[in-house]
Image 1 (cartoon, rainbow, N blue to C red):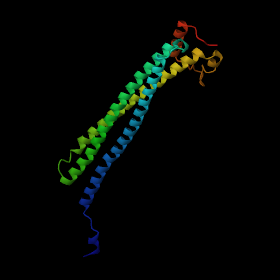
Image 2 (image 1 turned 135 degrees about the vertical axis):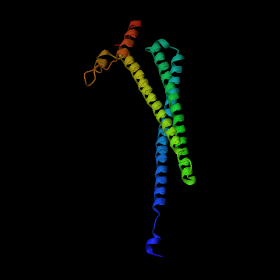
Image 3 (image 1 turned 45 degrees about the vertical axis):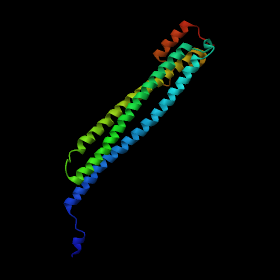
Image 4 (image 1 turned 180 degrees about the vertical axis):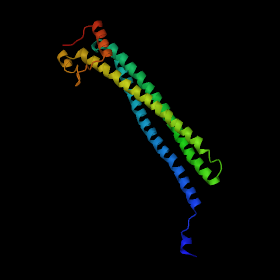
Amino acid sequence: MAGGDLVSVNPDALNSTIEFLTAMVTPTLLISATGSLVLSTSTRLGRVVDRVRELEKRLSDLITSDDKSAIALYELRIDTVVGLLDKVTSRARLLQRAMVTFYYGLGFFVLTSVTIAAAAFFNTYRWVPIPVGIVGILFLFWGSILMLLETRMATATVNAEMDFTWTLANYVAPKEIINKYIYNAHGKRRLRRKVAETLEQEQTREPGPRA
């Protein structure tokens, strides 16, 4: 037997093996990416649940307070907390839907790997992994859309809470302190129009305790 025969390789078999391994790698990368999205979504959902419980406690403390007149901007506080509860509840629902969508995508990517292996072994229905993988990608795309919506809602939640904080600061803090923070480094007013309107309504309703 010649030495060259010992290392001879069938080119067709080698190409087939390379194609099979290449096809198996793509679903693996998508599975890893989807798993990372599931983990981050689960972490965000846990934080939102904690935030809901914190807001519920704040609302309960406000409602059961004995001396409501001693609490500055009491009605606005109630309205703000209820509004924040509504927003974080919607965020939790979006995150739950996104996580379920990512799990569906993860399942379809795993099924894609299985169908690729089955098509390679049985050499039949080689087209099956393609639509299965496309369905998984569509689930991944829809989950990303839901996460984008949740991110926008999270921004709205932060803005609503900061608007109340500015309103409260303008209502109770001395004027000379507030004036130092009216303008930012670019010379623009920090006080948003919504905050100014809310503050004007509250000051019209009752005189503020500002020193």
